[in-house]
Image (spheres, one colour):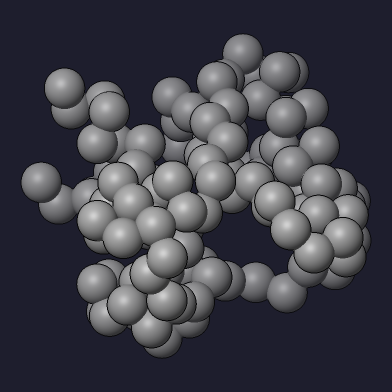
Length: 120
């Protein structure tokens, strides 16, 4: 299966605030009509959890407004399912998808994780 054809958005951008992020996600939802919004769920480092929680809140709000499911993904669970190793390093994930950005590679991994359950 070519997961690149099913993943909605795999571009890295600079976070410039919740308002701009909300506009970006809303425009993607309007343009692509996704069945689900898949996002990573931070589980360590307080600063990362606080920062990503703001973005997750925006995603959850937009999903609720548009009656779209959200799928939270924990890194090590996705790594175990997709790569067979829950402790895989960023370089392994980036190599799997041929991506130079670790963030884009993570998005591809989350998408593959989600789609792996949809195909069954």
